[in-house]
Length: 281
Image (tube, rainbow, N blue to C red):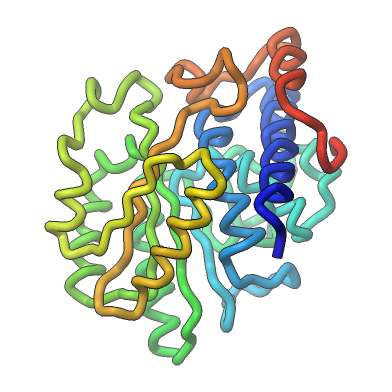
């Protein structure tokens, strides 16, 4: 287990990786990746029980699905630093034939990836199916999923929410990155969720609201709280408020960084704000 300060140092390096990967590829999605860094680092380096000797079935270990697959730069960096593959491979992001595709894929057999994602709305269904499989196999470990808030405009999400609650899938923790930004602007302007917490609760889920999703202490506390609520007849949902582009001042809070790569000049400015803590790839 890592200390909170160690986790913060990992976050700084992960953010550097994200900026460098997307810049080198001249395409990708830095905004949500930067915003979800604390969550992903806390999950893989503190909360989740997992093995870097990778097996697809994941029996006896916690499993994670990234539903909003476009923010895969943060996942790739975390997987590399957790020991799933050599961090030098991060330099191949989005290159022809790479295992690090622009959305997570299984054809290339990258360790840590169990399902292709990026077609928004599908990840919760994947998580539910996996959680039910664990129950059938008497596996007491958990399933985690991460979603974008724009993704919650997809109908399949709401069908899955109903199904999970009705079937008491209580070994599942779903998290939404609630930064109120999507590719076309503010979520509230594109298609508002109104009172999302009340809706999720009305659908029969137990909701943990994480108001500081970029505060490592708060993220750790929310994950532990969510875990303590599993096994009690309800699926668990974390409503995680984050800042898009967190850590890079000119990106923070701007939906324009949902899917744009920083220029070489902007990359220099961004990296100057992020400490190199584990060594660049």
